[in-house]
Length: 152
Image (tube, rainbow, N blue to C red; front, side, top):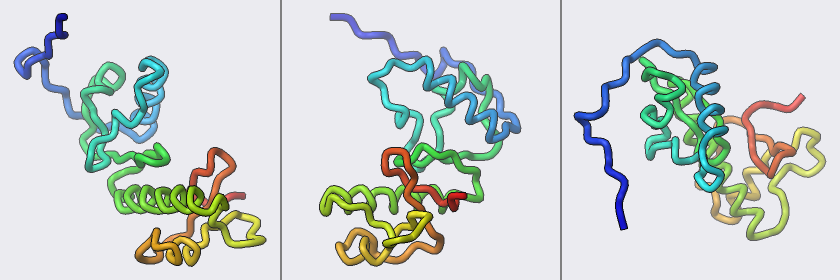
């Protein structure tokens, strides 16, 4: 059985660093998503520190951004540098929501709230959140994902 030869660091030309917008990064992610094999999850783009793997995006960006961008592992939402804490927090709250629903078969929302605001008391009562997040989160209509953006 043969193995595909890995490119050595000498074979790769370093990516040029440029000032790229969040929209350019978003378009590159969508292009990557459209061409990747269906069995490969989009999460391969997300590194441990929530930054993106710009080597995988290089065929679409042809550069590396001069400032970092972050992506939520749970919601795949893209964030700029100043929202890094939000990216980490949204992952934490989404994991708690998922665990709550798995344990109770219910959504952890405030009853009769038209915006489906997440009820932190329910999550804390089951030990799924250690502290109450600073901002409000809402349950979306798509696959029980959360968002920090208040619905209209």
